[in-house]
Length: 327
Image (cartoon, rainbow, N blue to C red; front, side, top):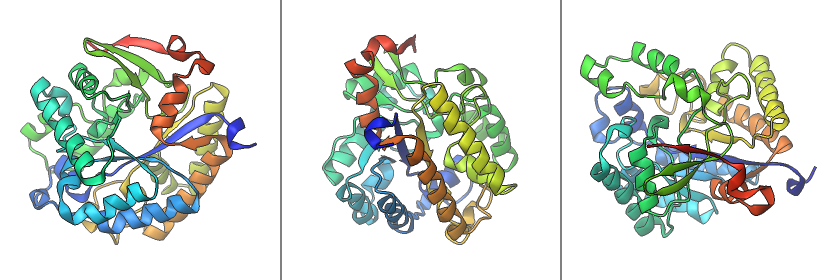
């Protein structure tokens, strides 16, 4: 089956840096902004080149502003990948910000990307899958065409409890992070792209896809976690997810993270993160298989292409999308 005959799916990567994981987990030393961008970017670009894939990289503004990352981030653009906005400070409690602070987070990142990389982002993903009416309203002011922040899974609160249990956060820090990974009610959101209606205008939402019917995640981090118990079971679960997506007409938005490829030898400080007991060679080989299976079922494109196709007249246009009020 040729790419033109396959249904559309998109692949994106949240370039969360070492410091941002430490910060979210309440670990000391994040204020020094330790980074693995110089190690990770060449690794993932080579992987994507092997699969002839162009994807969307959601970048954190603080990393774009840091001159030591410029060489590597520019290479992402040079190789033809799309750039999205992932906030400036990468705080998964951004849904609690007011209009002014949201505008600052979005605007500083947008300007840093334009000035450093010479491209203007048109899409946003909230850190930790956070979203709010205030954020969505802010996106309309910058003319963004899509948001990609929702994770329609009932397991978000479970993941949050696990994260808290493995951390040394105090009560105040836990309160700040109470919305991490979303709410139980997010599990009942649409799996297909839909329109948010805000006071600033409509915003297309492309959810991070979960398994139809079961609403459990199948992005690469989750698959790697399963593979620690059974690699065969993880691949069988992926096959089930992809076949159910085809059956229910869901074009996946498939998510990658740096820790999906970086091994225990690359970031020993992140030993608390699931899957960081695995070596890099295992993860890269695993990712190769997953991407091959995605390509077998779907035509893989960057997220802005996914957004255009989702709203194209040939697919029914906006009238075919579910419309919800985020206010």
